[in-house]
Length: 195
Image 1 (cartoon, rainbow, N blue to C red):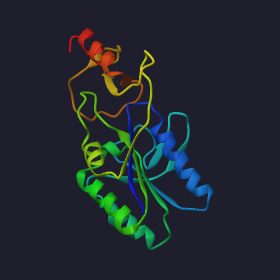
Image 2 (image 1 turned 30 degrees about the vertical axis):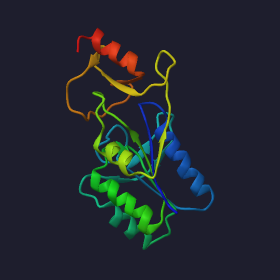
Image 3 (image 1 turned 120 degrees about the vertical axis):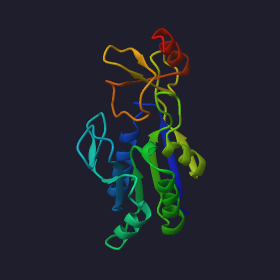
């Protein structure tokens, strides 16, 4: 039985690297994968999934208007697809998550989603919320805080490295804008910055 999986973590846990490795494993065995990434993520090339360690692969992009079930069903008319991999899954909508569940249930293709659980204010992203609610399997990918404890929070920082606690939930960035921390140090950094 195909399943809908959600692999989540704080920033810098290797989600994208793990996704690309999973795709490589399928392809190495002669199986086809279909990769998606969020149109909103403009840090690298458009329609390319790029990891911080230099791995990358071409991908389809999704936005709020794309029906993922229809897109994947159309692809199946041209070739067999053995696995769907979604990068930046926090940017999925509820409808997207339901469509991906239907891909696993009706098209019988496993769907592996990789994304952040929460934003810089510790609020669930829409895609993450619905994946946590509807995925068949949840898997936390771990990264570490500066103290060595498991990091679960994403601290947004300004150009001087000070904590930021106001602004839009979504602001695309990497190590220049975010630090993965444990809850204790996340709260301490916020207090120290007076936010």
